[in-house]
Length: 382
Image (cartoon, rainbow, N blue to C red):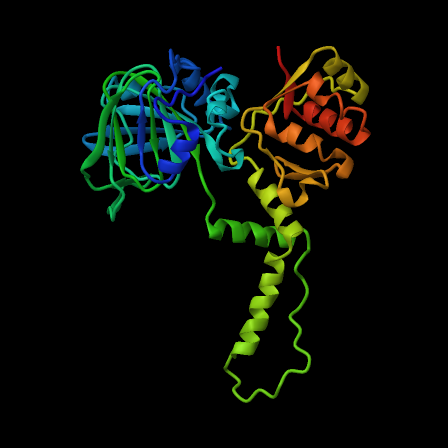
């Protein structure tokens, strides 16, 4: 279990003064930190088709990038390359444990844990991210330079690499094991490895209005909602055929606004959309599935259910009192009698028999838990 150490400040101070405002170097953010997985284990993940991975390297001074899976790295030599694996927390409980120290941020903002293994002088080049990231240094050393926000030109150093022009650093430091560098969106940065090193980046990404409207449109289409036609009985005589006048524009806006004002509809859209995993989950469906009574007995006997890494489970205030939650994009409605169970399910990574005991007498809740365990969304701790 990792504990986040913020020397001289509290999480509240961090959120008020640094979050989305300015970068921060946290020396010894994780004390006595050891890599949760080894370079060989990371390379093993990058061999898998369902795992998103990249190689970034330089050849004859030019930037190159390849996408996985990869089965060999010998041709790359000993310098100037790095292996990157996205959503490594989906595949390793030890990596997933890096998420928990940042629980002062809502899980719906979490993107994933990206891991980089880099050889000497390796990196991905100077760039700007559109998300918040906590870069946790593992083994080895890496020099990080961070510039100020500004009007930085970006260009394609390779078709898969967007770089930015050189910048003056406001942070220029070497990170060692346990150090953490927080970088908000829009700050140019560049990390260069001084010796073979591992970095673990816990990323938090927001959605754009375009993303959310696209998700809303998909939700309306999938659920066959929003099909009511604009109505305009008693309208006055129209004399300018090509004009959309103020009154008609107001009708159009009101038609759209009525959708946005439907709180239950938006709650379903947001809960379903935000709970879908961006990358594939490591779901291990049980060959011998539990019956409801068997699961209840296992929990009563001291069993502890652990959420599969990367699984997203949310509830929305607008519908939580009705016992509605969203697991991996699926809406489940337990009714008002199950409203107390929803935060127990969604707020905790581990569920034991004591926490679940008040709810296992409700057939709908026990049946849903059994279904999720059998599908691999939760599994019993060893």
